[in-house]
Length: 123
Image 1 (cartoon, rainbow, N blue to C red):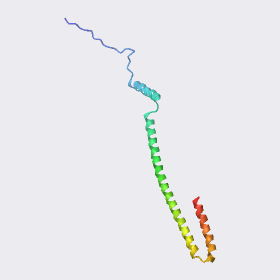
Image 2 (image 1 turned 45 degrees about the vertical axis):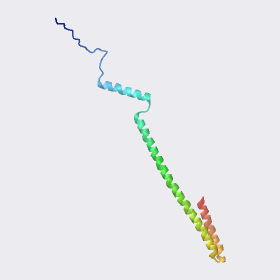
Image 3 (image 1 turned 30 degrees about the vertical axis):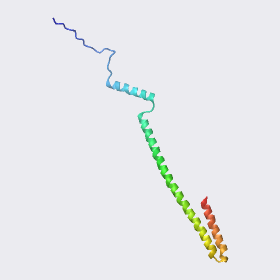
Image 4 (image 1 turned 180 degrees about the horizontal axis):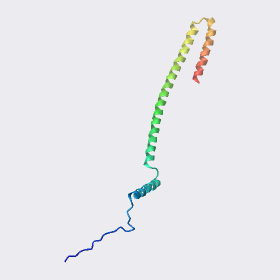
């Protein structure tokens, strides 16, 4: 005795319609957009922010290097100014010893002009 079981063939019902790939893709994209709206900025925004941070860091490093260079120039200028003042006082002492008394007046006037110029450099 052979028993035969009835074969059931399933036919798609109206409730289990398989969406087309294009419809599924559209639905998934809209779901991704909805989820991104819930969680905040996208990964691209984070990448851009990271690039901005790295750019700002590089700019700060460059500014610090420039600051070091400018500080070096200031020290150099201060040294030169000290040497100029030292030389000025040396010349003044030598001139006071070597110059004939009748020429000391005009020399003092010239030295006062130099003094005014040097005091203008201090400002």
